Image 1 (cartoon, rainbow, N blue to C red):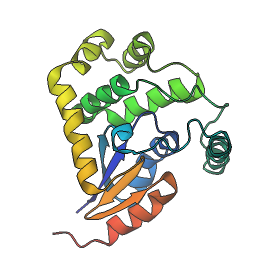
Image 2 (cartoon, rainbow, N blue to C red; image 1 turned 90 degrees about the horizontal axis):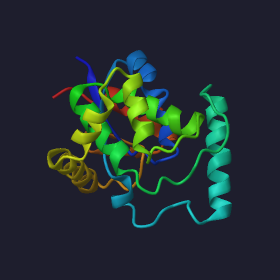
Image 3 (tube, helix red, strand yellow; image 1 turned 180 degrees about the vertical axis):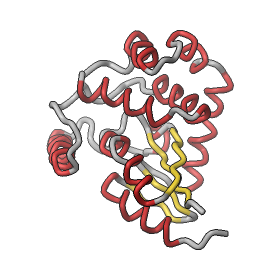
Amino acid sequence: MRRHLDFFYFIGSTYTYLTVMRIEELAEREGVAVNWRPFNGRAVMTEHPFHGKPVKCGYMWHDVERRAKRLDIEWTSVPPYPLERPNVPNRIAVIAAHEGWAPEYTKAAYRAWFLRHQNLEDEKVLAEVLDGLGKDGPSVLAQASSEPIRQKFADETEVARSLGIFGAPTFVSGTEIFWGDDRLEEAMEWCKSIRPQ
């Protein structure tokens, strides 16, 4: 029986780039099923941890680049940051998670942002990302603005808040939460150690 790990993520989180590019392969190797759960990371954070803090922000980008090289994940240079209005790309992720194509979409969105330095707040860019996945870009964008999807996004954010999640990426196994890309392997190990109910 495969164990399940909840992956709470927010397109707008820098370290989430590292996770989305490697979580599927690691999960397959470890025999863990991953539930992709996009949420409004900004809504659960009381303070933006890096923006407007040049020393901390400089460290973050150096660390992301260093970890990308260590993990053999593609890196070009610092992308546009922060995303000021990240809700539309994240609401698309809600649709993708519900329909089963969250990994493909999330990786494609991060490639557009991190590697091609495209603005994910531009609906033309999002439509191109969706079209590249064989989706009807305008139709998905319209659905992402619908009240049911807005509500699902808000509901997932409340679930994250109720679990004590305060940032992204966060992994949840049972009642345990693990915050940060550098905790992915530990979260997988914990998940595998839990006796199935």
